[in-house]
Image (cartoon, rainbow, N blue to C red; front, side):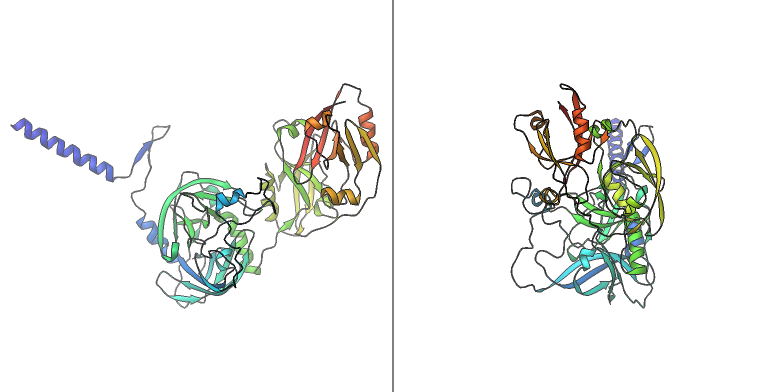
Length: 484
């Protein structure tokens, strides 16, 4: 009987121990056999430490159709007809466009979130929360309300800065370093989803550097932290209580997929809005594309990484600085660049009027040029009228004329030989070459005129192969091998 009682006590103790383990933070084993906390015990202290810096934002605006309390990416980024047979696949991903109503635009109330960045009353939120607002009202965690003034906004990054004149003491949040953020790291979102103020949700960083087609400066933090309509503009906070992102986007009907603007990128934008009320971006004046494996082979690159210049605009900073088409940009201000998206972001944040060192590879040789940035602007080229045509390799080609430039969508100052027709059944036809493609090089030699093209093609013996460097409008450079 005693043994049975002892056994019973043993199982009770074992059960209690198991229960305690279940209630304790879950742990796992790393590759180095070091225990790590998989789930924090709670987020109480963290939430309490930052709640006074998070605000609710209510706006009254003239409705333009659709739900004004959430931010879904709308429209077809390809313009006009979808390249997927008339159906817009982005409607499946981000939700259908609800903004096509022809009804009179009524006044509509909108909801969002924001966070205080200093004791003077400056508050960061999303542009889409306050865009077009007739009235902006900010509610603090203590329920005090203030009318807010829009200081400035930037639609390209979806950031806005508003200001309140608060008599009470404000509690600004500390800004962290989103570059130091790791995938898998715990984060907390605080905001007003569906108007429910001071809602706290927790999750992890699912990915970094997400490009989701919302603009040229996409660089989102993806998180599975619950983000809903009304969370927009609120802070994404790390376990140190620092803001590392601004909650911005959700995928319609998505589960556990939300996006936040990295605070490191936002800091520069917010500083400009606070100091000048607008954002000024630098302009380099080039068209670029990523390097494909074929292009790397064509230019004889091994381990080098960079971005290919497809066009240099006339009278641009790039032209003044000596950058040429087919240069491969490898660094800017000493920082390596590996993708066109990365280069666009870096250039946009450069100071206007400052001379910037830029590293590149030209015909296999490394060079450094200096470029003085100017404020972003557009420029157009001049006309070069030529009409000579030449047929070889199953191709009918011509130098660029104003009519041909207009027909195929090229700038009129472009130099090169344009393909007008591709012979059916020819090797060029089977290679995928299209009318409108521009030939920029033959066998690693740059060509800009019909004379240069004809000379290089005629020099190749029958049966041998030519490597054509082709520029395709709205696509970039491709390399095609053709047998003569």
